[in-house]
Image (spheres, rainbow, N blue to C red):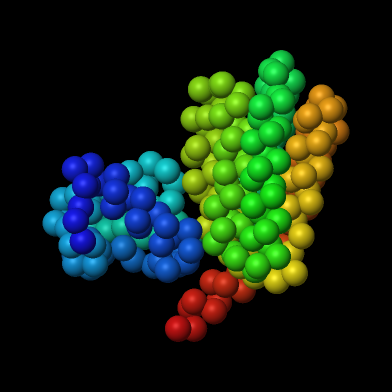
Length: 222
């Protein structure tokens, strides 16, 4: 594997992808020597990459114990989902002062891809476009504060969102929520868009707690 010049950031992205998809499950050790061998890097850049992920809230470090993938308690998950809902409601409020036609055209294109991914049971395609949908809305606020805060919160939420999606993807039609939110924004009915956005995030909160615990149990049995 040929590593780019920004090796720590490249490695952070690769390790992050593994954490999100539970290749490195919550609570598992991230040994620098093992990761260096896996990615063909030296331990220094691996350590820097893990520090980057620590700042994003995905990894924890303990002196003399090394790095581990962040493990969430049930209360952590509830706090995370409530915070995401509040922040994404702020996104809708920020959009209410913007021209949104170009944004909604972009969201419609993403919705079409999500619909096709759902029909083909393409979990990875659906997941990546789901992220892109929400990120496009955040970016369109042109708010550096919202972008910065949601970058952190969304990074922490991605492993949780992935495991829920993987558990319930078959026959899924969640893209309808995104389509309805898009239409409300296009109609400049921001009150409705905000209500649907909050509901879209929080409706699965208790289910997330159960699915996360079940997944941890399965990985613990390996």
